[in-house]
Image (cartoon, rainbow over all chains, first blue to last red):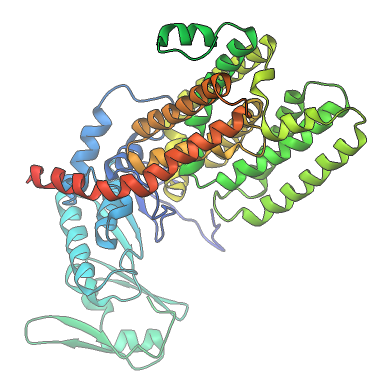
Length: 207
Length: 289
């Protein structure tokens, strides 16, 4: 694990460590091969009981896994092999994989990076509904903030080595973002209350 | 006694000579072990590592022959050390090809040196390379059984962590699972399995028992236990049938029959089953709705 250059990091009032059951993690890329023919349910089951030694004798992990898959609307994918699922379907499975052990915090590392506009919207809505129904916190990392804008409770905006933290309406203003990026940025509001952030195209390293 | 229509006497006949008994016993144990360990090899995409381990084992076996020790001890030593080294040097399962290939070539070279230093006849070398299941002794069978039981016991203990870390290493690591240790355990399983499988098919043909049956099984089933059962079944059928054909039919090497049978299964599944499957999948889907 990376060590901080200064100060302390605390997660749930404790030192950060691997294997904290309060955290569910969805990595940016999974090492799962497109040739791997294994049913989705098996992955979610193993995410729940894979830490245990020995073979499983009870069917409890199966029920729990099916429950998590239902919560992300993936119950009909349970018996399909991972190799035939689309990117959007896989994201649902990975979300169930992270949720199955009942975490309080979900870490989603750029879950939108490989999705088209429609699946992007679906996934953001799904994360939003899961967060509310399961009462978990989602920390979602994204390069493009626009699809997330309707659902954000709090923003940590990192750009140019500077950080702005706060409620979306405080952080996401033309003035604060322009100051953060050092280039002109505009926050637009349309007649239906939609918000979009523009003007940052020529600049990379944003978040 | 020639092959007859009476299946029972044919089977009894197969067990008449001790060398056939030993061959069937050792072949059965090896088929079971290779079918199970092979499933993890395919799941982890470590088939190149398994292939390389057998070549490393070749150097060990040749060295053992040179020092007048049973080849299996050389195999165990070299594959054990080689497998652990592979797991330690590059802990991530993928992207190991270059390191593995480098070690593999060196070990084959070492094997050649040992062979040239060994003044005796070359039949030992031949049986290490291509297997000599008909030359298995009763003490070999006992050693094979012991190794097989140990492998099975370890697989049962590490089953779920190994399965999960093979499938999704990043998440397994984030969950605090000992992925590094599991990687070493896995390589040791492959090392021991390889060492006993060499008797049956030799270092060069190890793929046919360790990788191909499991790869076929993965095409046919998407649940690990079902796939392992199929993988073991294919390895068993190929071994038993191969021995029977060699006994009753033309006396060509058993390992030739085994590899040919396994390859036939592979072709069948690859080209015939794949064309039939879309239909059955469609039927299953339409029944559900």
